[in-house]
Length: 352
Image (cartoon, rainbow, N blue to C red; front, top):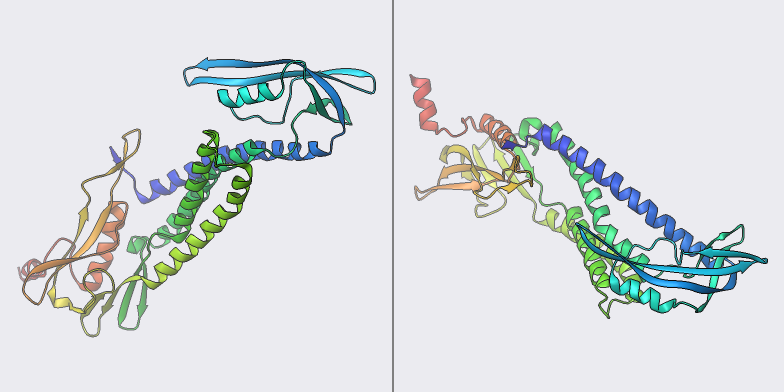
């Protein structure tokens, strides 16, 4: 099993974001085009036609069984007879209940209004405008669009972190005798994306399961509510991150350190610090191929408190060991320590 380093993670995110975006974009283009044709068909002239065949076609493969409504109809335009089997542009549903509803609506022998393209009478449909299915498919594709956006944001963040390679991706400001390290929290944009994506998928699944309360009007309302909820959640989380900002301040002039988060907020003398280390979580997030392991590593500062008891301050977790080592090395240079070594050990080495 290989560990995912910063450079490898950046390449992985770029590849993942590119493939996911292109794939999602293809579906979005198809869905948008079919939706456009459905709306355009509302202005088509109509002529009376008759359904000549109405049946359900069953398809079975390794992925399961799907059902398609096959509706054939005949109509005449300017004395010329036409036959067609397109009852709407883009039918994405493959469920039996949907196919049954369509065949029930367009029974064999039933007279129907055929909407045809005046410039090409062979192009015709029986259903026009956006239906519940169109909004459902839009909701279904929404999570994938959100994942694409999230992947690109993560990629940009990793590029930014690469420019902070010396500190392991942590922003550090030097203000006179003070060194201030700011630790970023979970970005609000990610939470907003999650709300929109999960909400869209939930609504799509409930709609496909034909839950009675999921009506067309309700889905239309959710098309407004979901993005608004995502924006609100993003803003609230961003404000919360600002209010509860985490930072580590080192006052070199007074030889003291303060962590403005967690259990310790008071100043700690640098003489109390004994070593720098890191903690690795026992549970790892493994990729499906089991070839990549992403470690959640937390750099820590060990010190002896006023009661003479050894304790630690846990800093921001990082996803790989190289970032943790870079940050610890940078911090060790400021504190004049060696990572994983105590001051006494360092003094002994120098004395020898």
